[in-house]
Structures are given as structure tokens and as C-alpha cells.
Length: 394
Image (cartoon, rainbow, N blue to C red; front, side, top):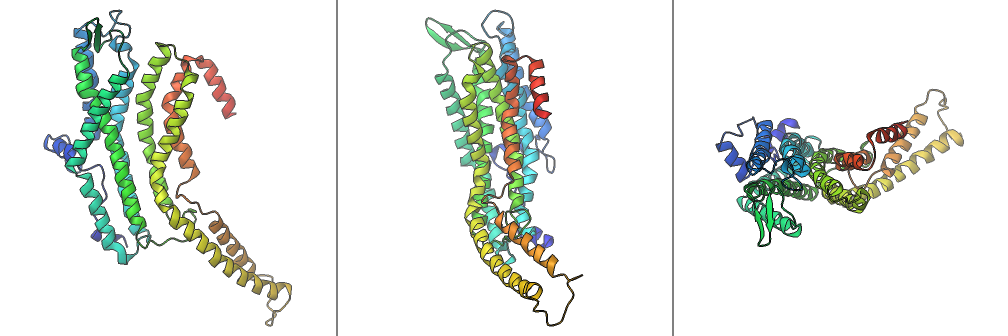
């Protein structure tokens, strides 16, 4: 089966295509079979945070009291450009292979039947063409700049900062501010939007595969008919939630420390963010809900009928003593078969409408909230936080 799968389909590598990928390859930042992700992540930090630091130093706004929040005391620059931005790039080396493996497993596991191999190959090709779309990335760049300027417009600066000067005549960006608005934030926004685009392509791929005559078994131990591997692949998207939360934590820290906004006031926003994040990451799996419910319903009927027939025969033979061969009960396999049939029926009953393990949902929630936990230090001493954690663990 593996040999056939390798002959009919290209790997579904969502991370290795698109105009930006081709530009980086021409520049030598990406080589064949060597994506050099760590080098590109370091370069992203050097092209964003370091120029902002140098330009702020030249203007005397990197440290000191020249402005209310100098550059080196701006938490958002650290979390977005030194942590979140590189992590969004490093995520490619983690998610790329996992998605490709999950896509190929549809064939190697037998979920996609041999008669649909060519259609599956066409689905992969369509997804890769969308991945390589120049128009798509142009739109993403345009949206990145739109959201950047919208964000700066909605969060107007009322006092001079390291990136903007405010006077009676209005607001003007410093050289650091021009680099921030013209390159750094749009790059950050673009990488976030590109991940959303890739997630959409994955959703599109799954929805097309779902329309094939896929083979599911209601008694499969993964309690998802054999699709549990798809839910397992979604777990790795937690790195994206972790990266985005890192970038957001710096902004919230500034609000709490400098603007004196209570941490509790952000609780509804954080809860909403976690719910929306789960919907975005787990949402693609909804395409399988219909077929999983149909498989479960059919399995309950089929195994229920089988159980009725077998238990009826068992009852007549061993309870009503209709045993013409006088077979002894001791050592018979009938009882074990009855137990096995009961276990099979239990597996059918436990089938889930989504091919995802509840532990994966917990993993995603933790990935969303973990970067925000240092904010607790703004309202609780570290020793009290450690005591609380110790009580919870005990």
C-alpha cells in the first residue's frame, strides 16, 4: 500500500510554496531539502527588533526618561519581534511534515480506497496550486498593511513615544516608527495571515477528501472510525496559538503596568480569544461530523443485530441447555466471544462526532493561555503563585 501511495500522490507540503518561498530560495535562504528555518527565524528578529533598537538609540529614545515608554521598556517589541515572530517561522518545520504525513496517511491507512487514488492525487494538486498562488499572497500583504494602519489608527498615540512624536501640529513617526509601521508590524501580520490561509487550505483539503468514498470502521479503537490521526495532527497547531499569545502578552503587560488596567478586566477578552482559537483550529474537523455520525448509526444497527443473534444463540445453548453436542462450558470460547462482542459494541457507542481526543483540546487551551500566565506576576507575588500551583498539583 505504501508503494502505491508514493506513486500516485505528491506530498501535501503546505509550507514549501508561494512567491515568498520562491524569493527566499533564490536568495539562498532556503535550499533544497534544507529549509534553514532557524536561520530565517534569526534573520527575522535581526531585521525587525535590531533596527528598531538602533534607530531608537540614535534618537535618544531607547532608554531613560525622554518619553514615558522608551524602546527598551516596551514589552510588545520583545514578545512580538524576538519571540513570536521567529516562532511563527520555526513552526513551519514542525507543522509542515505533520500535515504532509497526515495527508498521506489517508491512503496508507486504507481510509481512501484504491479506486479513488487518482481523485486523491487531484485533490493534493489543487491544494498545492492554491498554496503557490501569487494573487493569494498579494492579498495577504495588502491585508497585513491594512490591519497595521487600522490598528495604529484605532489605538491613537496621545503622548510622544519611541516611535511617534506628538505635538500641537499633530503626530509624526520617528525613523523607528516608520520602520515599525512600514515593515515590522506588516511582516508580523503577514505571517499570521499566511498561517490562517494555510489552515484554510488544510480545511479545504479535508473537505474534498471527505467527499470521496472513504472507508471508516465503527469499531476502530481511536473512536473516530479510523480518522483519529487527523485530530492528532491538529494538536501541533498549538504552536501557532502559543506564538500569537506570546505576541499579545506584551501588549497586555503594557496596559496592566503602564496604564494600570486591572488584569481581571481582560478575563472576558482572554476567554473569548481561547474559544475563537479553538473554533479556528478544530473547525476543519467538522467536515467529518456527518460521515462519523452516519457510520456510528449504521454500526449500532449492524452490531446490535449481530449481538442479538449471538446472544440469542448463547442463551439457548448455555442457559436453556440446548446443547446437542454436550459441549462442556469449561474451556469454551463462547464466553470470550460474547465479551469481545460487547467490547466491540461499546467502541461503536463511544464514537465521537469529531475525530479529536479531548486531551488535544486541553493541549490547545494550555498553548493559548501559557504565555499569558506571567501576567499574574502583576497582581500576585511569585511565591504566592508557586504556592497556588503546589496546592493544585497536590
